[in-house]
Image (cartoon, rainbow, N blue to C red):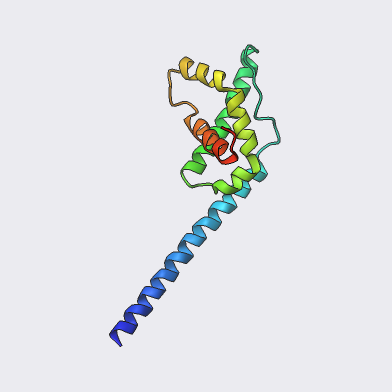
Length: 132
């Protein structure tokens, strides 16, 4: 009877762990859909090299949003697969079209880590799409 009790306890613990991780994934997926539903429909791939300071700051704000989304994915706050399906092309194009501006911002603000999450996510997603 002692071995049977251990089997039951192990099974119950396994089920509890499974349900816990399933709940975490459902919460991340829900947050991801909330994010998607609340992203304004704007073109995040604008490229304003040589344009006015106001336009460049607008791009800076858009890149900040994409950086926050990328960080949220990296930290497990958002479900990557959901966000990838919705906005992979947007993030990749925003990174590609603004690489020189990102380099400029890194230099201007003396911060080599500026937009590293966008850069990392764009590279990962490019590889996933077979674009490199």
